[in-house]
Amino acid sequence: MDGAMARQQGKSSRAGAVLDSSFGSAPSATKSRDLAKLFHALNTHLQSLDIDYVLTYGTLLGWHRDGQPLPHDTDLDLAAPVAAFETIWASRSRLPAGFTMHDTSHRHLGPKLYVEYRGREADIYFLREEENGQLRTLEASSNPGDLLPYPHEWFFSPQPTVFLGESTFVPAQSLAYLEHIYHYLGPDAELDPVTRYYRPRQR
Image 1 (cartoon, one colour):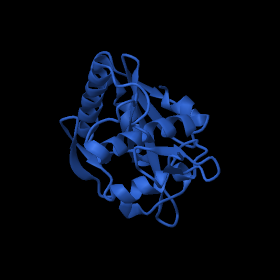
Image 2 (cartoon, rainbow, N blue to C red; image 1 turned 60 degrees about the vertical axis):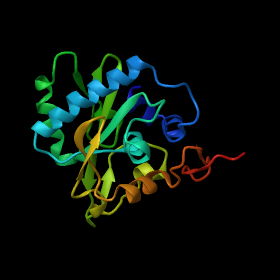
Image 3 (spheres, rainbow, N blue to C red; image 1 turned 30 degrees about the vertical axis):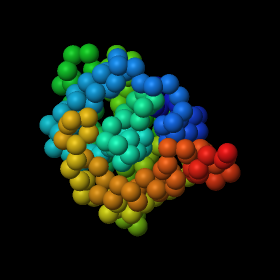
């Protein structure tokens, strides 16, 4: 899905689906293959730019759970410091044929990009350092976990890992970062409409 538009309308559909991997249809082979190709292309491209970046949101949660995208997830989520925006955007012509980068910053609270391949998208969110040294994700959202700042040391320095068979990076304190965003990380998660955080599904 277009991460920018869906997230601008609020995160209930994205995060509710993202957290709960026990609901929804199984991933198709084509979708899984396209996401893997998209990740390979973008991950390789970002590494060539010598910038800091990490997996984030549902993609980080999938890595945390079992090292792969959540079964029903339809896009990828990455994050980088806001200082990397111009470098990434200026490099868009160097992406492989068939991969297109788009700037949707006007729909968010600051810089925002996504890369498209065969209808699949990889969102690139950007983090700004506040005056108190904490970091804030520049995203339009109705969920507090997406908007509230968090400690600098949760992100830096990104830690190497493997995702979809590729060497990549996750935040320095991934668990703390995920719990900050979602609170509850289990596969039976549902959105609490009052707090806008996640809780075990009410039976």
